[in-house]
Image (cartoon, rainbow, N blue to C red; front, side, top):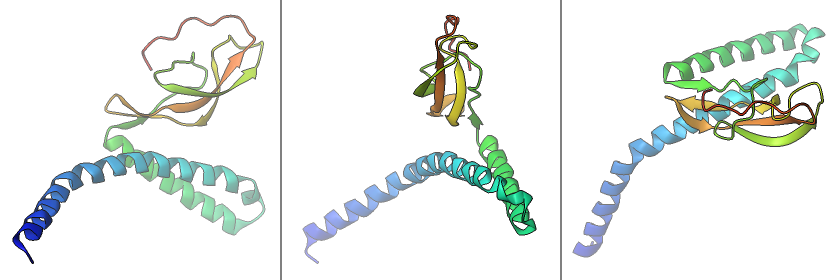
Length: 146
């Protein structure tokens, strides 16, 4: 191999080695939230037929146990879920996906959580995707606390 190609090849390997640990850690953090959501959605989809079939009931129990373990592992690493339901909409923690006409709830209140959001060590990992009420009395302004 010519000296220049060998030098370039060594540089590429060195650069990849330096970047890899950060990339793996970032992908793991993002993937954990995504995997937890998938487990929760599977749990909701299976719940209806579980009443009729004991095999599906056992599957559902296993999915719920896996979800609990995954959630506890994420919490051990500083990942916490954003509690959004019933709180005033806050653009720092919530992403509005739709508005729902509901005069019984103050306008700007989160009435449905479509996909949960997560914080890692107090910083936003992913915003909660929510439905926000409109048409009710005006809500108090949202605070920066979650």
